[in-house]
Length: 439
Image (cartoon, rainbow, N blue to C red):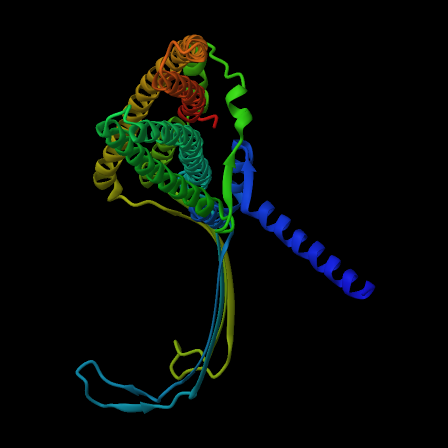
């Protein structure tokens, strides 16, 4: 009997452990900061941009390799046929025997000394592209974070709204039960029963829609964050009690001008166009290179009859090359490069202006959200006062139960709007961080 009891106890403990583990893995409270950290590690949308950085880094290495010397090695073996000697009028042909085995070995080395800055500009363009790839990753990461904040706060709102509807449904059922009882006693009309049944049906339908919205938002978060499918994200309820700094519009504008990712990308585009302009201008300059070569050939066929020996010779020198056609061709390309740089500067100015406008607009919405919060705090106070008055009247039989339930519904609605007002402040604060490039 003791062994059976011990086995049952161990089985119960195991089942409880499994249940607790399932509960822990099912629902998970996630803060916004933790959500950002998980997204940085798991989000598939960021992986191509990480690869883009590696690709750009490799392009810089390729551009730097242009500074290294070029080395060409060639080796060959050939069969030489006999030659024929002819007079100038193609008469008196004479067979000229030749050694039939030919060999060639050549080693050539060249090093660019000056190329008009095209090598350095190519390296600088590669470095700028590497920075651009890094900014693209940061920009995509901020977009993803802002989208996740939207999902997260919407989930917070929907869960809060769901609690309000469930409480209203429960209260409506109580009212409906009371009216049905009164209808049975002949005190209430059947139309009152129908009206409250319709109200209950509408509330239950709205609750189903809210539950579906919660499921969709949770699925979006779980999928993007790479969490297990059975995970249910619970927003951090302490978020609404955090203090969100207001500062002033100039603070946020200055922050955006220093950190805005689109603005930095636009500036890098200007710099890359300037470097490309230098590359185009290099066509107008001469190219200077050092070269060295060694040849080992045989037989010597420039003599008649040929000399069946190997001949080795080498040379070193400095060469200057200049494309004269660039004087009347490159000027058009250079003008095109200058126009491209001018357009990039104009786009930078426009991006700067749009950034300032966006920051100012979002700052106004942010301060508006604080004003809405103050109004909702006042509404909650009024709703609580109204609920207290109606409750006292109901206890003294001076008010109907419908008055009591209306006051309770108004109190719940005001509290729900207060939480939503706090969430709106959080949303607009994170939007300001996003626009200013500091998310």
